[in-house]
Image (cartoon, rainbow, N blue to C red; front, side, top):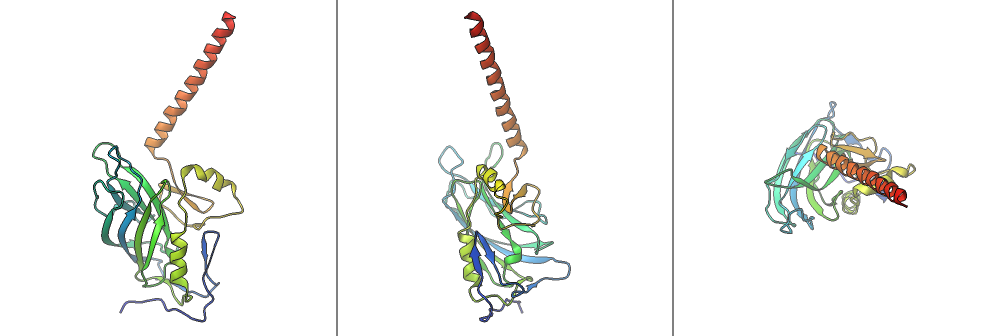
Length: 252
């Protein structure tokens, strides 16, 4: 028989504040095996309003999942020329440390030539999942001007129990309204030392890092190379300008 969290009508309500979901202290026990492992079922339902990555005005989207347990796994098919793809695919994943890991969903545009383009990403804290209950959410993608990913996640053998009566509603509302962030926003987020994001002290895939509790994707080799070239061109331009100015002054 499948295990499932129990709703406790006497439990204080879950609260959403400053983009974080708060639970009453010690009110909702987190059940997990002694080794900390667990299984989750993930439904990759659809995406909407994705950015266009191709010259034809469309993208060819698919999804990968990543965590410290999963190096990188493609979990959907590619849907050609579509900014509102519907996958309706399902996968079961083994997670090594469900209380600490962040599960990351990367949405990509498939390219036949060159590297696939990232259309956005979102991270999910597995330690906030209720035991045995599917949570359906519409996730705002980061590193994207716009785009929403609809997923359903069920913690099959771990999770919160004895949950508040409003927990599922509060969790869904929290996730649906959690904003995505652009790369340029992280300088500002980094300066806010008194304000932390929802993922403090989580362990994450090596492609990412945490900035004050917010999930940020690291630059890959291609992006670093492009940045170096641009920086070199800017330096060369400044040198040329100075040479030109010096030459002009000599003529005077």
